Length: 328
Ligand SMILES: [Zn+2]
Image (cartoon, rainbow, N blue to C red; front, top):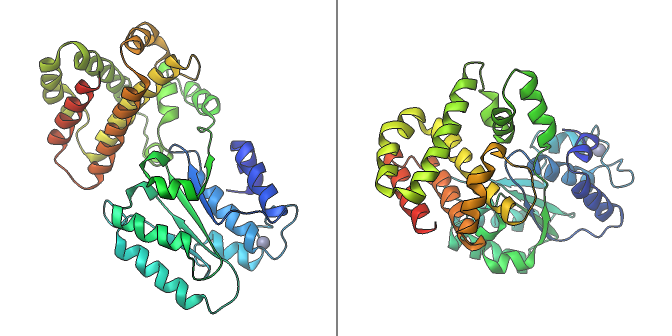
């Protein structure tokens, strides 16, 4: 994605980054926080480009010089990446990165490293990284990418500058799906799903999403009022509908949107994923605290993470429902 396109998607963030580059006031550690689809990964790469670019102007990279191209292709020697190994980022990975930096420290210049899904760092990995943030071997910049900065060690949070990404341009995405013939409610839900999911989206999925949406509404109401029934619904309907890991991940997203809506109700504003369910949302919002909503969202995000580790789907959902019941 080009810088100018990113400026349309994330005007506040990109202006801030551009000014920092231009005035040479970059921080040594950033947390890029934003939901799926907010393009924080692209923004991080663009920022790296603007740091290394040979023809940077007004804080924007040229996007065509050798440095820019190497970064875009992920093979710049001074820009490195950490991805979760399985379901987490492990201490050994952080140490390997540090070793590489110590070695490369001989060469002049800044080193940038991007930590994808930084919230999956184990506690020991986080502590290793923390030492690194405190005593870098050479001039470095860390960019920690996460959907939720609260999952990072507090000591890391306090040492990094947090940049909050706006949710993806919902109106644009929703309009697109409505043009495809979907109802506003279903289009709104699809628009919120991550790009990776939508890449596999097919015509016949429309009806499937609509049904999945109805299941979320049913499950939520049972979680609150008829706990035993909720477990039965899981077995008889939910796991039949969201069959495999990929589908269940979408189901969990739909569930997450419900809790985001609850937060929006409490904060009296926002774009709703379930705008036709305002009555239910409003009544539930009265009986649950903001902390409880946040806790429920964490449970769902945890479940999404455990899903990647190939946990048994039924077990995962049963545990999630029990957690959600405690919090409601
Ligand atoms: Zn360039």
